[in-house]
Structure formats: C-alpha cells, structure tokens
Length: 175
Image 1 (cartoon, rainbow, N blue to C red):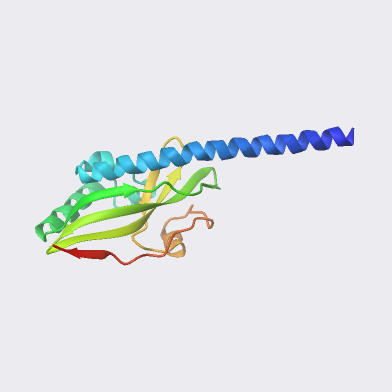
Image 2 (cartoon, rainbow, N blue to C red):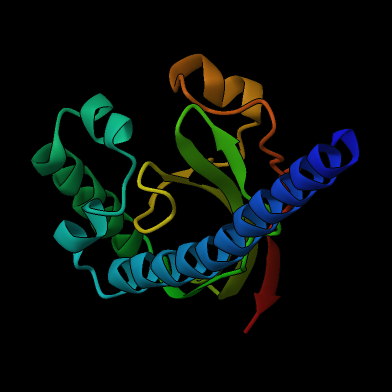
C-alpha cells in the first residue's frame, strides 16, 4: 500500500509540474506577443492604447491615465524637436516566468532603434511583464536601466527572483 501511495504522489507531482511548465510555455508566447503589440502602439503614437499595457501602479504614480498620456506625448514631441525619433522596437521572448503573490512576472529584452542627429542609435532595455490573470493579459514596466532593488523601492510586488540584465551602453552608427 505504501508503495502505491508513493507512486501516486510521485505521478501527481510530475503531472502538476508538467501542467505548470506547459502553462508557462504558453504564457511566454503571450507576453512576447503583447509586448510586441505595445511596442507597435508606441511607434504608431497611439498613446491611449499603449497606456492599456502599462502596469497600473505606474499609471497611478503619474497622476492617472490621461496625465500619463500627456507626459508621453510631451516627451515624444520634445525628442522629435531635437531630431530624435524611434525607428523600431522588437521584443525578445523571455526565458522564464516567475510565480509570485498570485502573479506571473518576467523580464523581457527590448531592442530599440532610434534616429538621432547625424546617425542612428541601437540599444537594449529591459521590460518587466506582470500578469494577474494566469498569463492571459500582461502589463509592463520599463526599467530604464534600473536594477531590481531600486525598482522594488518604488514598486512593491516585484519578485526577488526576477533577473534584470545589467544595462548596456547604446551603439551609435554614423550616417
């Protein structure tokens, strides 16, 4: 009887782990897709739709959705006045999902290409994706090169298990 119970619990553990791995695999694809959609909205200057992908505490910190949209628009207008504009964003599929406090979290690499005076610039940045509905819908935090400990000071609810790559220097291409 002990032998049968041991086999039963071993199989139960195996199948529940396999289901989590399969669910995480599906979530990895969804977060990449939604991150790419968010990047396209930013390129298209559809700031209202873009805001729907922003992590709610970030929206609250900026004074609400309308205020955040206004700040993004002002920032982009100032950049363009100075001869800077975004050419392309691509989002890389994250490697792992972290389960933390009834959320799924992950770090995604964002490749950015910008037109700058006298050339173009490429850089890598990190986004944090957070889902509170088992990976069906994701919101994002742009780390702006900050490390996890710095982010956790202003954004509670981020897992210590998130791995945020060290900030890399942008690469300039003269034209």
